[in-house]
Structures are given as structure tokens and as C-alpha cells.
Amino acid sequence: MTKMKIKLFDRSLPAPDYQTAGSVGFDLAARQTVTIPPGQVKKIPLNVGIELPPGFWAMLAARSSLHKKGLTLANGIGVGDSDFCGDNDEYQAAILNFSREEQIIERGERIVQMIILPYKRVELEVVVSLGNQDRGGFGSTGQK
View 1 (cartoon, one colour):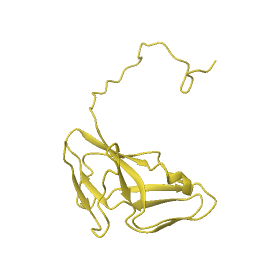
View 2: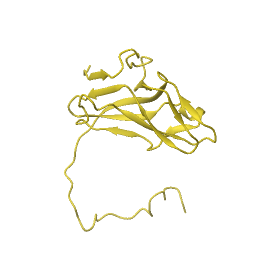
View 3: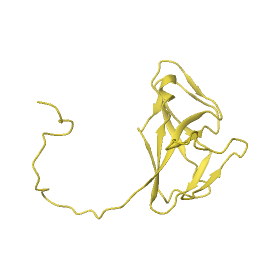
View 4: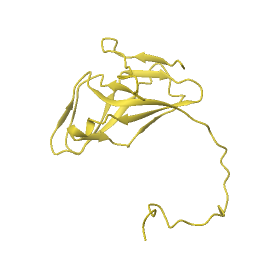
């Protein structure tokens, strides 16, 4: 198993952990209570800094229950790069309140999950044409 260093900004909150043997992500909790007015986005500090192992990146995804509060990640997913690893680089979640009511994220409430994934960089080559047949445009699969 690959090891990863993790720093807690508030050590009085529990460290993240995989909730079940089959979990692919570990839950991250709010470090402080944050109120999110309807239609607005607020950044929620997640109480962790990490040092990714070489060749890995971190994905932040909403916990499946987040939508029940009328909340979602404002940017769909979050991408954590390997060089976001300083002592003050605390992960945050940009949370959008799509409900019509003020929502409160309580300190210690688990709101997102972090999934650690391998990656391989590619060399980019700019060309004039790709030389392939067109499929009909973005979102065209199954459309006539």
C-alpha cells in the first residue's frame, strides 16, 4: 500500500479515514461552521494538507448526501496537484447553495470525499488537423 503524508490544521477534529473496506475515497470534514446564503458559493476549509506520492493526484468529489441539503461543489470536482503541498496549503471546497434557504455546514460535518488517483502526463503536440472523422459535435452520441 502506498503511504501519503496528511497534516491536520485543527487536531481536535478526527483525522479522515476510509469509512468501509470498499470505500475508494475518504471523507473530509469542515474545519469551521459556515453559513451559505441561497444562490451563493462559500469556501469551506477541510482541515487537511497533503503530500501526494509521486505520480498521483487528488480528486475532491461531493459526498452523495450533500445534495439533500441543497448543496453541491461549485466546480463539479476539485483537482489537487502534487505541488499543492506546503504547510499552509489547506484543501477547501467551494460549495454552492442551490436551494432557496440558507444552509449551514457545521464544524466537523463531512461534506466531500477525496480520492487519490494515479496519472501519466502526455507531451502536447499542436497540429492543424487531427485527421479523424467527425462524430457530429459535443453531446451528439445517440442523437439523430
